[in-house]
Length: 116
Image 1 (cartoon, rainbow, N blue to C red):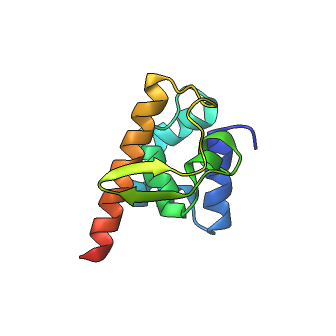
Image 2 (cartoon, rainbow, N blue to C red):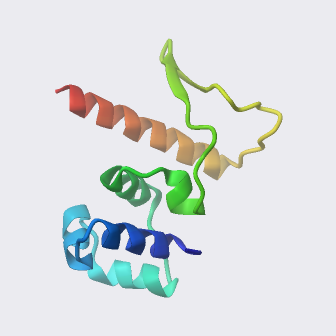
């Protein structure tokens, strides 16, 4: 599976659901799904987070096709740290940093929703 769409399609089939139901469940138009299939566009960051949460899969797999070896996150004094990463090893772009921040906010939102 080389593309995000192929991985999404795999998840849909694996859950034994139709693409139409998938679109309805996640508020995606069938036109957008078709654009993803043709490579005309890709899902937004928010939509990727929703899809990952819906199928309980990592964003690393969804976006890159591989599992993350650095999944251990913990909360400490309202600061999120990644235990296994060495800062000098990874040079993240502003876009990647923004994506990570958005994902952390979404994870916090999901956790708070589950506590209600």
